[in-house]
Length: 183
Image (cartoon, rainbow, N blue to C red; front, side, top):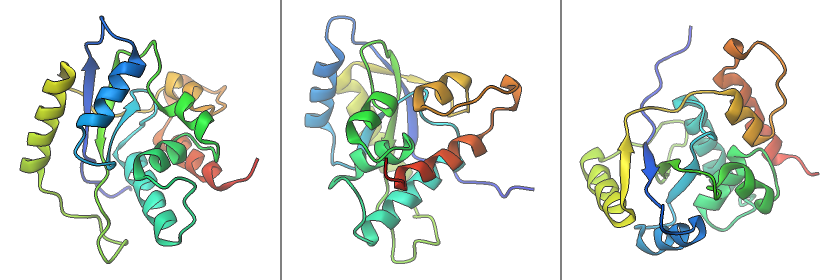
């Protein structure tokens, strides 16, 4: 039996970018976000709370050990989620592309002294930040949480030929390990 996992600080977002290119929306986001601990992730790249916390733990450990391949937590998170050591491939898989109309707005908490404990978050402040970002991006909230999908597995380059109803977060979590392998 799996223990309950706390809510990961991510919000489903509908991108109302009908009149602008995704690249322009991303540039705007990079200017208005409070720090590099905020990112937009493909809606298909997140499979569960456990998947997101596992990726967060891995990037924080990478930074602690000085083994991260990116200098910024946002890019390192997308790289790890995408299961690659190539940033270009990571952004194709886990980043927002021209056909995406929905994404996850993610906040990556700073780690505490003990990486074995999840950080305590100020959700009131986070929600204010989310509202500000969404307003500036002209985005709207999606009332859903991450879930594993075949489309997500395909987008991240996870081979899966089995029963679609058996796709689980475990498939996505094990894919994180590929981010540490050389190609």
